[in-house]
Image (cartoon, rainbow, N blue to C red; front, side, top):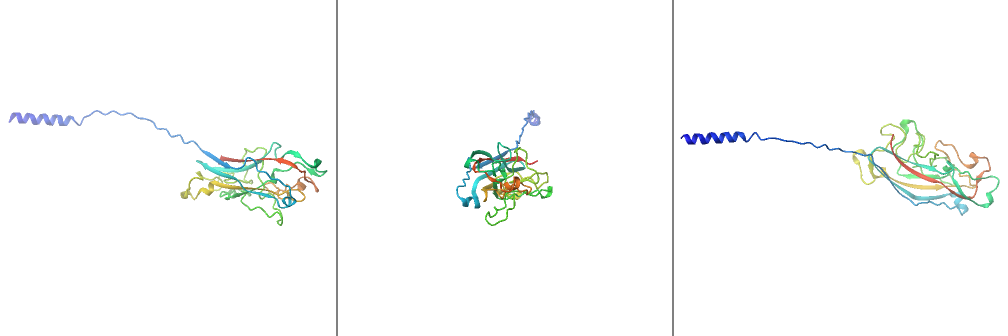
Length: 261
């Protein structure tokens, strides 16, 4: 009986000690760095050529359909705009002159607004809440043969300082100037995915750009104008009887994607 009692007491003692194990611990810090990402993918020829060698092309103009495709991916709220630039500032760079100078009324200082753009899809974010007016290039090109020109409707925004974002009265492809939530900046997303939870799909990040130039007869570029509706045809800018000097002219179109401010 004594041996059995002692054996039972030892088992109980070791059983109690098993719940008193030692504990050690270490910690590691996990850091997440969410860098803002803005990616603009552009499909376009290196050079878009407009060759006016038929009188009907002067009168009716030339359109280059779907000459540029823009695809946006962004992790932040963003704006996208087009801006015309040149080495000369706000006029086309003249590379060559024809016809011995073109005559006394021939003008070589052609405004960059001679180039018209049309975009598809339209800008979803306008400047109405911020007091802006013209917002994008989604309006159809006017009929060059029958329509009375609405000057500047599709004329490209241009600037001698192209990296200064356009103001509230200037055109954007998507987004706009200002800080009014829901009215100026497009939300983060990508043309690669749909985001039905916030009302967007890939078309809000995918744009097709057409280009048009209409010299007119005489070649005064009747549709040219700034974004405030001021006519910039050659007769208005210079004097009655002015027309474009025949020659070769070049300009650049920059597409700039930036975080909305």
